[in-house]
Length: 211
Image 1 (cartoon, helix red, strand yellow):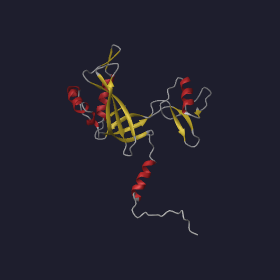
Image 2 (spheres, one colour):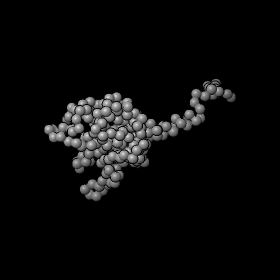
Image 3 (cartoon, one colour):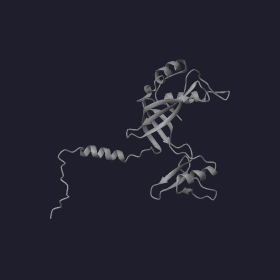
Image 4 (cartoon, helix red, strand yellow):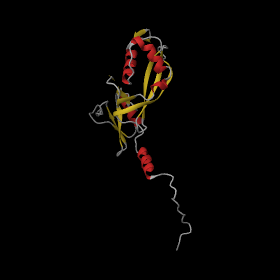
């Protein structure tokens, strides 16, 4: 007996080929967030976030790097606008400028203090000028963080290198959820990082490096 509710099938004109289906399926299996490791990244977006609250002659900016798989990571920088030093509560520091120059070298921008004004106008008047710059980056954590166990669905507290952080009794610290783990870490004076950072990067075209 035939089933009157059975549909009629017609796949003469497929809306998706096998290769395109596989491509989209593979994309769904790519982790949304980067895991610690070494990646080739490209700047895909950059934007100013406002004037630095400690020194108004510096601007805060966010630079977004992406992998060929579409994963992305944001990196914060400070950009000088009129002077080399950075004022912090009346004290002058060169550290922000040193960090900024390392960033320039890391993305392959040749420069010196003699031409820093021209460099800034070329690349930082419109931050889209940074787009397309490629780097090899080491991505990881700067301090304490959690390792999630997909099988047991719990969180292990580890240090920057991924080693167990033991409690006062010498036991591994495993938590059922992040909030409980974060609270326990805070009691130990530990700030738990939620996302990976760019720890170092080198321009693909040059050998300049920074940490």
